[in-house]
Image (cartoon, rainbow, N blue to C red; front, top):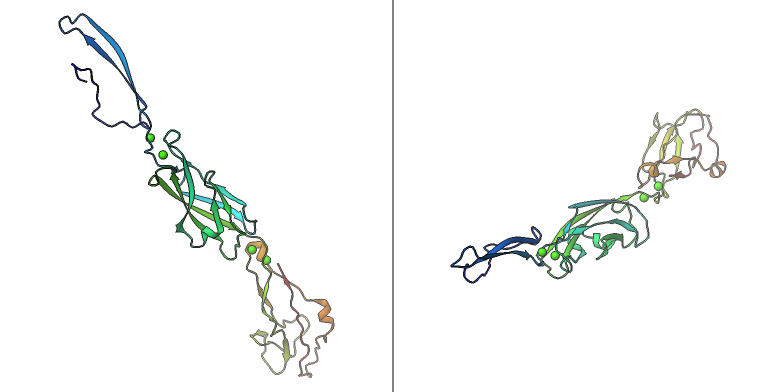
Length: 256
Ligand SMILES: [Ca+2]
Ligand SMILES: [Ca+2]
Ligand SMILES: [Ca+2]
Ligand SMILES: [Ca+2]
C-alpha cells in the first residue's frame, strides 16, 4: 500500500477456488498529528475466472449390463465436478473415439449433459463380453479444460445360443457297429465304431455338442429322439451278424 496515494496492490495472484475474500484494516492519520487518525475495514472479494477444468469423479467406471437389451438402455452414469462458479462450471460429456475399443463408440453412447451411458444397439456377449469406452468431459467454453475416464462394461449372459453338434453333424450322423473292428468304442469324424459283440448297456458312441453361452446357459442335456429311434432297427446282440446292426442309432438333440 502506498502511504501517500492510498493505492493498494497485490504481490501475488489470487485463486478464487482457494480463497474467495481477504479483509484487512487501513488507517489514515494526520502527518503532523499522529493522534488524529481514522480506521476502516477493507474487504477484497475475488471474482471467478474460468480456470478450472471439469474432473471425473472416478478414473475408471465399471458397469454391468445384460446382453440383448434394446438400443437406448441405460448402462450407468458418470459424473464430473468443475470448481468454478456458474456459468464457468458448465461442461459436457463426449465419447473419445481415440480411447477404448475400436467399435465401442458404435455400441455405446453418453448423454452430453447428464452423463448417462446407454446402448446404441443390443449387445452380444458372444461377440464382446467386455467393452472399453473412452470418455472426455470438456468445459463448454474453453476446450483445453478437460478430463478423461475409461468405462468398462461387463456384458452379462443371456441364454440366446443354441447348442451345436460336433458329432454327429448333418453330413455325418451315423454310428456303425461292425466286426471285426476295434475292441472299444471310438469316435472319428466319419463314423463311431463299437465292437459287434456289444451287450445291452455297452457304450456305442459318444455325441458331443458345444454351446457358446456361459455358465448354466451352456450346460447341455442330451436325449434321443424316440420318434426317430423307432423307425430304425433295434440293436441286436447276435455276434454272428457282421453287418451294421443299426443306423442311425443316435439322432441329434441337445438342449441348453
Ligand atoms: Ca475459477
Ligand atoms: Ca471451468
Ligand atoms: Ca449368450
Ligand atoms: Ca445356450
